[in-house]
Image (cartoon, rainbow, N blue to C red):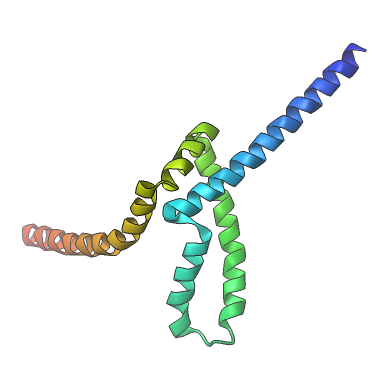
Length: 136
């Protein structure tokens, strides 16, 4: 009788853990998407970058294959996030990213990133000049 009760208790706890794990994974995927690092945004960007170089006939097949690889990458990223955030953290972050300020952060980050990359490139160029000057 004890074994039956323990078995039922174990199954109940395991089932609850899997349900929580699935919900946590789902929330992590939402967080990644709303924070600007999601699969959909990356795919649109990649398709736009490939379009000038690939025929219209071949692009859908290429994107299908890339999507499969991106899905694998997304699962790895979800696992990484899961190591660093608790379910409570993720719920709070989702609330933030769905707030007006969170939406502004996401929107402005998309505008700021290209400018920051340009500034970084300029910085690297100036550093190269300094290093070359001291190597002569």
